[in-house]
Length: 337
Image (cartoon, rainbow, N blue to C red):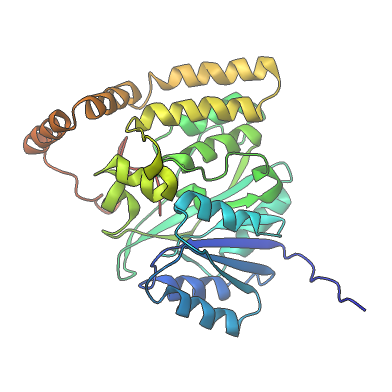
């Protein structure tokens, strides 16, 4: 007699990682120690060369809820993130960065919020920002006015006209809402686009308590790569990018992907036109037109772009990091990996 497969868990957590040995053990422990125990943790190791595999295998041997998969080669972050989702079985799904932590009651609170609001597609939470050694830096929450509206255009506007760092990409999703979406994508800014697409697909709910511990450190993707070299950032996202041309037009690409998300997720013509109106308004909010112009200068003449950037820093100073209590300014960053 063939044994039936185990029942799917309520929550699947996908943890994509590459060379994450410094923080990975602490991150996995914070997931294993959740008050809400009906979960599976899927770790997709992108062919790490450090002790990542050893750490994961040790946890998997101690906890049957943990599944460790090592990619045969480094696929790039985008495909590895999406592989986590495709392996998931739970009704709810969450990506976890290898350097972030969860308070013990994170899942219990987030699951309860989604269960209480069946039409909601994503649960966000308050955020505790911690430093390299776990020290608390600040507490805050991203506020998206209108994100609970029944109108998809208003929800879209709430996300694309609000300055944020995309921390809510690491919220708890209703898995069925992610099916057929663009998922993580293989381009910089894809987390920002996915949040916009989730706004199109349904309202969000929020847990006010800062139960998501988001780690700020110098080796984060936005610090180490994204703001320095867009082409290297593209290679980080997708390891096959070296075989094709890459674009440095970050903000233009994000706007184009917003447009594609509307086409995927809003079938009603009238609602789609309203969403397109929000996309046109994007050019007038948050300094986006200036950001696109800067991207064009960088693409046309990287040397001129660096000279202009150096001049600006000499005049106004360089914001090496956000001071405690300060919210991120426009253009501060996107990907949280």
